[in-house]
Length: 86
Image (cartoon, rainbow, N blue to C red; front, side, top):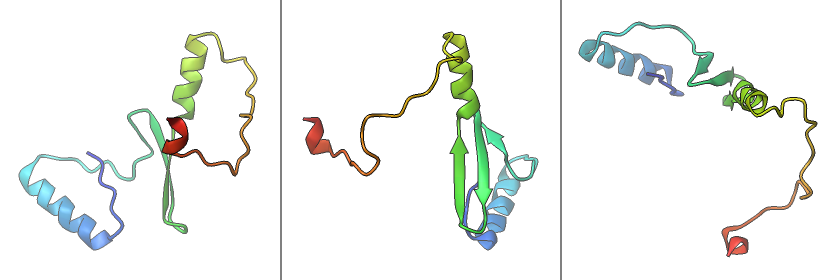
């Protein structure tokens, strides 16, 4: 189980409650779960998830790892809406 919560007091309270009901080990701060790499930036309060290694492995599996990436022809500021998809 992964617990992600902003308030440390709430975290410790939740962790104590879970420990009372279940046998659990604290493995410390998570770096990877379900193939996703997790990076935490405490200064900005952001949690970043990356599947770069998974994507690379899929590309290798289909003999596409050596292909060069290309940019999409859409301008970066262009936003799609659900209305445009009809």
